[in-house]
Image 1 (cartoon, rainbow, N blue to C red):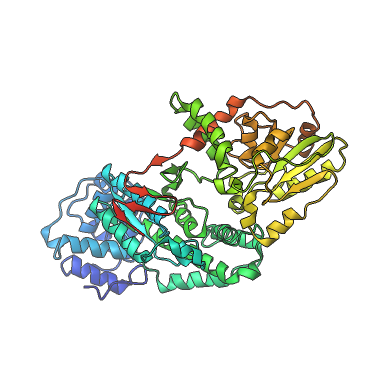
Image 2: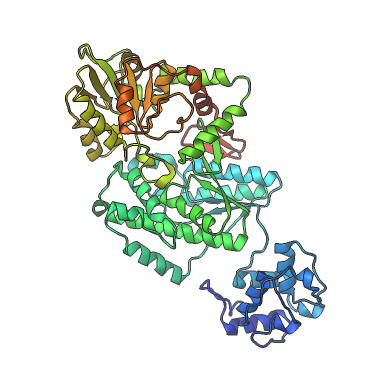
Length: 576
């Protein structure tokens, strides 16, 4: 019975359809074009038209559901699809129309005419075998299943250059003794115990593989063109550049230097898109949840869902490794995140102010700018030497590689990027008699590319000093030393405001619009603010919503038990 199956993923041939009709409908092979016409249908709804079209007939006008046109003795494919997709009652069907077991009939029909067996409430799609990713995806799937939702889980078997199992670096060998296939199989087995349907990997047809190959081989060799490079109208080139920046540590990587990696990223992204699209068409999920949506290995999931009008959610890590968070919009969309932070604040308990204060105090006492490692080598209380009787303007750089290739999710109200803003500041300060600019380079720059390090280290100018990333100068003591703090989107901007310094934001940020920082809208307005030696700090309480959110955000795990940010158990079973 499988000899006539169309494995290419295309609609069955006329011969295959006749054979399918003969096997399923008791031997009578209806003439081409009469599959629906034979029972006198008029004004058919779209799903019947599609079946009729598959049998070579003419598409009839769209109308109401079958019940409205009084069908009786319908062929089983009409009854089944009507029942599943339109929640209408089954109509009488003569037993002679079921010469094969119903389950086999549904399997054949759904497989070859691409109909959906049922409406899946939630489909969790994962492409990372990294333990925290698998654990979080599994957590989300189990929570939905125990809540009574029809939940599916699919691991996409693709070569994922973003995943640690494919990163060519020995330091990642510590992330697990077991193979990634073993980890995935174990998670899938545990999920089935909780009623989650684990879905088989989707097969890509030869035609699709050739399309992906053509897409990869014709990739542009300019970074700007690569960002705009699309696959079937899906913005996969942008995600490829985002992954490229992350893996190389360079904001401006030369595609010629990384062509093999670019090819792998594009191939991964297109494969993920095709597999996600196939899953959606086959299982008809009402919602899809997957990891953050920025990188090449996940972008295709959300692009396929968008094209097929399926609701999505994004998961990300929470305030600490014991939590995860779900977002209805991309977590890199600053406008959405600002609303998200305000919602958190409005729904918070009576301890919200206390927790908001705690965030800033904890940061200053140990966590530093970003994490403990960034300030562990700094000498507490150390500030630069005397620079004369100048108004001290301190600019804190931001590690902005995460936001360098995300399209229009982040706005740039004045300058195109951080580098342009810094150059403007240096040019302006050279003409000021009573102002001095100190540029505190983010400690994380030490982990970035040589090109990025050289750019920051080469900055010079009149009334300018640059504090290198490995300097022992205390970044928090520097806030107290400053008269004004300037940032592009760094968290230190809101921290400086909390500690009583006027803070000027030149770019976009999650804390924009809270009233905690000055937000000029033109270059002239920037320097009007900086020239004002009476510029006052804004109220400390305006910083608390951001602090509260940053400290408390996320959902605690129930089924995944993280040991730290890298390892953990899932439903009591070790994954590494």
